[in-house]
Length: 372
Image (cartoon, rainbow, N blue to C red; front, side):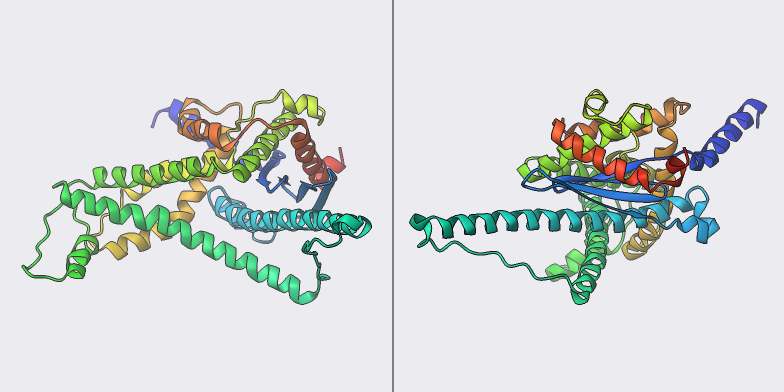
């Protein structure tokens, strides 16, 4: 190995290992709000129907401090992903609660107006009742969050691992790109189906895994594109843009106000959309080494490799956001940047105010900022 190549690899490893010292800020858009996360804290800010911004913030346990190995490159990606999923569900539940409460307040105001107005007293408008929070309700929310995470994992495994693998195998068989089926005459339909999906014997595993990965990517892009037509989702995408602009303002050393945030780009290299697109690319490369005839074994190994895929993708995303990242990292993250044209929309000033409120609330709990 040449000295030049060794020096480049050493520099890359040093940069990756030193990234942990930087104050990395991320976030997520929710219903009429934004969740912001710093290394040691997170905050959620949502705007009520009456215009008031409601925030909640908490400190985050750092798993890498309790389990040192979770701070190592690649391993930290899996830990961060699990924690981010849990935080995401929590943020969505909080935003839904604020939305329901603000709608309930409007209903109460309407009820009062109906009582005061004799001309409206005979209308049968529904009244809103609010149960006081109790221990059983909180336990129910925790159970619901766990259930949501399990459902999300199962849904993604079926949509992005099982379905593409089976459909690619069927396509390769019928296109003559795999060994032909041997099905006895008069076999039942389920025996034919079993033959189609039970074994995978393509002529080229490289071509098979490439087709499988491309189909997985098409599923993802179509899902995002179809969601973008829903008005509620479009509002979330606008808050997503507000989140990115606010993070950029912070990273560029600007004062956190609407005017400064408004002038920032809305597409960020360290976005969840970019992360998922990188996952698709890394999965194509890693899955290409899987060469088992049995379908179930291919599925098991693919699922088992997902933490490794996520860990590698996480490091690529982190490093690509650094100024010293090279052309390779910019190229591999480019598809995610392009897709953000859909998943982020231009926010208005009020949406930027919410994102700024969330980031300020999270930074207030950040020791590195408090000491500065």
